[in-house]
Image (cartoon, rainbow, N blue to C red; front, side):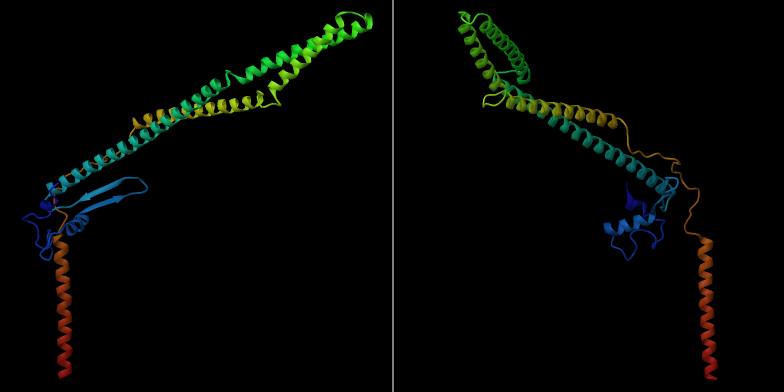
Length: 276
C-alpha cells in the first residue's frame, strides 16, 4: 500500500501534505501523520467498529480503507490459525505423554509378573485361601476321627496313622498360612505392590482417555473460526471533500482579522488619547 504516495499528491496543500516543509520524511513522522489520517472508533454498546480514512483523493481514501480491512481480516485469520495450531499441538503432546505413561505402567506390570512368576497375586491368594479351607476341613475331620477311634478302639493300629496325618495337615496348613502373610516370601506384600501397579495403569488409562477427548475437542474447535471480521457497511468513495471547509475557514479568517483590527484600533486610540 503506497502510503507515502497517498499523502504526497500534487494537489495537496503544502502544509497539509506529507512531508511538510519542516519534516524530513522519517518513518516515525509518517506513522504520526498516518495516525491522524486513520481513525478507529469502537462502540462498546453495539460492538461495531468504524474505520475512517482520509486522503487528498477520494480513490486514495477508499483504497486505504479497503486495504486496511483486508489486512485486518488476514491478521485475524492468522491469529485463528496460530491459536488452533497451538491448541492441537498441546493436545497432541498430552496424548503422547499419556500414551507413554500407559506403556510404562503396562511394562511395570509385565516386569512384576516375570519377576514373581505369577499373573495375578490376588487370584493366587484366592487359591491359597481355598486350599487352606480344604486343609482346615481335612484337619478337623482327622482330629474328630482320632478322638472317635481313641474312644471306641484305643488299641487300634490306625491311631498312629491318623496322628501322623494330623501332624502333616497342621504342617501344611502352617506353611500355606505363611505364604499369605507373616514371612518374607508371603503373598500379601506382592498383592499390595500389584494393586498399586494396576491402580497406576487405571490412572494412566483415564488420563489417556481424557487427553484423547481434549484432542478431539481441539480439532473440533479448529474447524470453527473463533474471531472474524464482518463488514457491516462497506467502504465507499465520497462524492465531495469533507476538508477543508471553505466557509468555516473564511469565517475564522474574517473573525480573527476583525478582532486584530479592533485591537489595533483600540491601541492606537489609547496612544492618541495619552499623547493629547
